[in-house]
Length: 244
Length: 271
Image 1: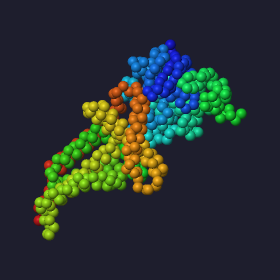
Image 2: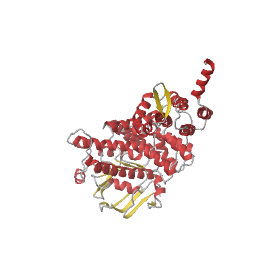
Image 3: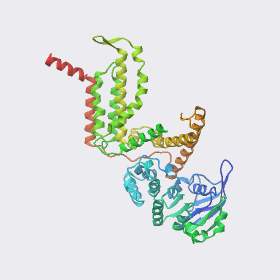
Image 4: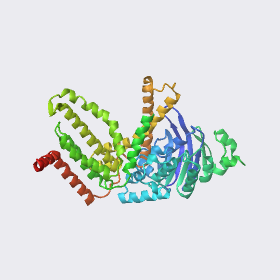
């Protein structure tokens, strides 16, 4: 099976305070698909992403990445294949400079010093922030931080990209840049977002989550036109469809 | 509010300074750390009443600030901020040690006052030297050298993250303080002591939450408990010459009381 497939089979997850975040989520995402994960607040989007990368593990059901079931034993290996971009870049960028931050992943993966430097330079150039390499991560604008977060993940040459609310806090220009960037990537992508216009631009397929269950799964242009479905999930059609 | 903001600005400025380029910035970080250590150990080795012998050592921080193109006002401000603490440590000396040491006409200077001046002078020299080290080296290079010198990786990791997140912690504290002051009755006297506990608790919980998120993010990027850093550039001849030059100067200044020698020389010529 390809390294780039993601599947969940009847996955359930309950937090320690007994909140049932996921109540039997199932789907299969294949090589190169770009999938939007949408749903109201508390629908389980962030928990689902955390389950895919082994930050938390299912209380029932199975997560399989590239044919390998995600367990405590396989988590390290699976994390090498998946790049996760967090919602808040300050959680992700912790080294003193941008260059060191982007180098953190490749060094952990065992790349040599020279290979790491090359990967870092390539990743920074890809997201268009090579000029920031010596800056402190925490002194950047939110758009620059987001770009560096993506570079820090790209430098690990992942097969799959997961992103949690990538457009939050971005100004329109930075958001447009991000869309252009993501359209260039051939990775399998899952993007949790409330920005449905963004989902329309970047993702061909959409999963709708409600109360920890996948209540709809289909082509983005169909799902985002289904006003009744969206309303029942505390969502609204994208702005560009509302004006029609 | 302004005080927290000032601390934040201080951290940011230190980062900015470390990214600049100068003769001192380009030296190998290990060389700068070793030279600073030699300087600090030498400072500590002087006798209690030594003042004149310390004066030549002023050349070291002055040279670092000048060659590293560091702003004098930054150092003056940091030293003034720390001065009350050192004065507090040394202020008992003039009262406890009243043995007369010097007599100029009617003015008698006691041993306590001389040791007070000696402590303040050493403090000024030590703090300036360490600040200049951080301001011309950057925390990453310092950590990289510490790790190669055999300091346990976990300690280096702690230092690195502490430095990085101190500013975020200050920002968090600043936000809490701002939220409190904007909704307090406007007494204008800062935070009431009775809510210190709950505010500190709130800050602690926020810090724990953030720590967990950072750890998750580190795991996602392949962290398995071992810190790996990029190595600084190779040792250069300039760096070695820098170390040799300063070591020779500092050791000579320690062994020979240069101001007293100069005075003796002048007396010999003109006396």
